[in-house]
Structure formats: structure tokens, C-alpha cells
Image (cartoon, rainbow, N blue to C red; front, side, top):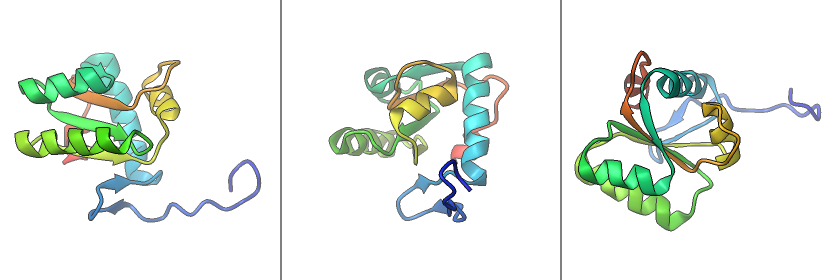
Length: 125
């Protein structure tokens, strides 16, 4: 149940046709691993920095908010397909994605450059 008494139905794990991960069990592990990568490794935050990392080959994985602009999602997904980098859309608005990392501002895209002690790359694959 959520705050308003309605029942949330996030039982499906991952829709492999679209690559969208819902707020279920798998996304919770991505949240934890993304936060761990932020603390122990190196990540780039924001669309421009993420695109640079993908194009220059320093990125190992990309996490993007589902509510980002459609043109940005398509462009970043295309770049990731070209460079064979894992790309995942998460079912969070940018404000929530920023809170997951521990930032007070919205984040639409995150690029994992060095995962540190986290296991996020195994979750993204």
C-alpha cells in the first residue's frame, strides 16, 4: 500500500522489449548499487556528460530516467547501441533519480565510468 491507501502493482520484474525496469525488486538493487557506485566509484551526472562518456568510450553503463525528453532518450540509446554499452531506462522521474544517488537536484542520465565496490554492471547487463 502507498501513502493514499491504494495498492501499488509493481510485480513485473523487467520488460525486456522496452528495457524499462519497474520499481520492483530489481530496481531496488539498481538503486543500492548506483548509490554505492556514487560513493566508491566514478559516475558522470547529466545528459551532456553522459553523452561525452559514451562517445569517448569511458562509460561502462548508462541509467536514464523514463521521463527524459524522447529525443534525448533515442539519441543516447542509439549511441549506447553503437558502442555496445548497457542502457537502462528506469521508471523514476529525474528528481527521484537524483535522490537515489543522494543529490538534491534532478538527474536525467547517469553514466558509470568506474563502478568501485558496487556490482551495478552485473545488474545492468
